[in-house]
Image (cartoon, rainbow, N blue to C red; front, side, top):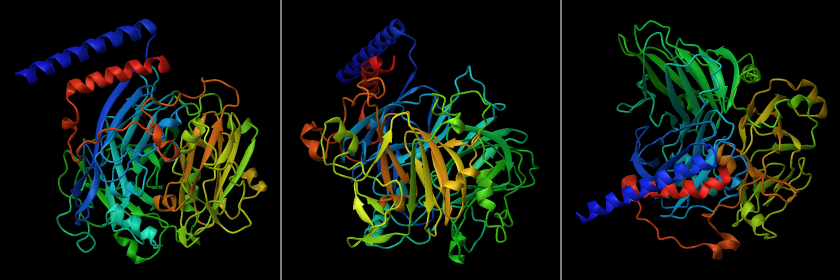
Length: 601
């Protein structure tokens, strides 16, 4: 009875606080809405390919829950680390305007210790589209911990297409029948990871389309649809390093959006989706229902029969279907005689410059073709090499080594010597080296970045905090003359781009977002081995209007560890209900809301 009275009192107090907060917000101005989320990140057992492993789940879900919000909403995510190792969550493609403090990578945040919780708080300012989150440390993404981020248009801004009947999220990605800690050890021992054991779709293995390649008893994904209706499929490649060709048997894929940009609407029978990339397709259920249909994601840019098993298969099930899918899978692209097939497909993805709605880099940089470039970086990667006896990956012959103190924290407290602003603009002539080297970005400058892939494997590259304009790609070595091939009008704005082996990709980015921003290989083995750097963008004027202040709950480590207030660790493995009562969460929400109001109103 006493507990019941205490809970009721807490709930009443929380309600009063929320009413007061709402009233105060009304007095100040019309605030953008807040959404409050509790996550418990913990291990669970799963066997998506028939081999039981420890996977990383969020609130008992693998993949994790979808964050479904609307343009300009404020997102508050309280993360409890119930793993047995430190944790950070990064929000891939969400631009974190003025707020690299919430980026969730080692250059900006100290890891969340085991048993501790930490609250992320950010605004999805001037954004729409399809993104995903994942744990950024120590190959943890290879064990799960990922989920979707859907940012919807505000009601007053129409979609550039008819509202779909339903919204479907698909996570596709290569998978190993090994724990992520074992994969990390293999890389630490100088080994390559080899061929994945398969492809998962929404955390599940393939439908048994082949009795030899697919063992019996594997759970597969089945998507239920109604005939004649159109659905939006948001497809994310959350894997390790394998490009996947995505296709739905007998159905066209109408591409409408990628990573926050509406695209020119084009039909594809299949599309190559590289690691870290996200796409939205409209798919109309215009086929007869004599049987179910295959949804396929198969490995691309690979050789050898050992890759035959690297295929994910789900089922598209019409409500009036008359039987199960059977027979061969729909064929992948046959580009044996056309090596430019995939690149030409990538070049065909253009920005819809007439669509209304939120735009990345809203200050006007969408007129990128008329802006003068102020900085050029040609970033060359090569096959991994031995540096000081360690197997390392490089950009411009530098293998990045994260310092114990995050770069952004070191700058905040004027700690020198943590890193160097000496990242070379072009490949070096000397031997490769391990360093904590960063790029000095010019605030409000316009940077041209050329990714030159001198490796034999396709690579993906990602920039936090920004959407860049994809202006060109081709085979061979990039030169100044390559600019003559650039698309200077409707190159799509996105945050992750592929670079083909023996080829280059060029992007342009307006450095209007102050902070410390991670530029990395999205292939997590290359990233782990050092293929990354940071672009540091500082406003030279003394003002607090271009970047949010260091959060009150900032974690401290490295040379700043003495500033950290200790937190009593929680027991591991608790479910989200046992972390805090509903009343307690409401009180926390109200407190966070009130503390953030001066920043966001």
